[in-house]
Image (cartoon, rainbow, N blue to C red; front, side, top):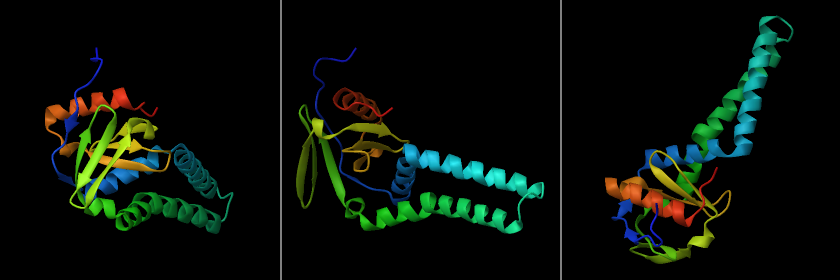
Length: 168
């Protein structure tokens, strides 16, 4: 049973680990419904074209085109998109300290601070190394779990669950 008011919590100062951020960005892309649907359809298309090629119902060129399409899609979501977003976003090169307050999330670094009311977040998901706090379906902020002590990760999860509805 959750207490009526959860006690505020503050993380230690944290920086982003490039490989973990890249993995979190991949996780973000793969969890989007439209991308899941597209990957499933392209995989079905690739399997179907392989089967048709095996039974000599289509030409090698058609099989090659489907293979190139599949390969390009996988390269895009696994490498090109995550690395390009990481490279563009200055956020991942900064260090931060985050505080979970009763009414808002407070973020600070050497250059300043910013706070958001909990109502500004539409949902959150949890990946192996991060909490993804979503403002909308495309805009989100990553908070590394490593910013908290082991016991505090559980408390942070409970706090976020209480403040933001979890994405299904």
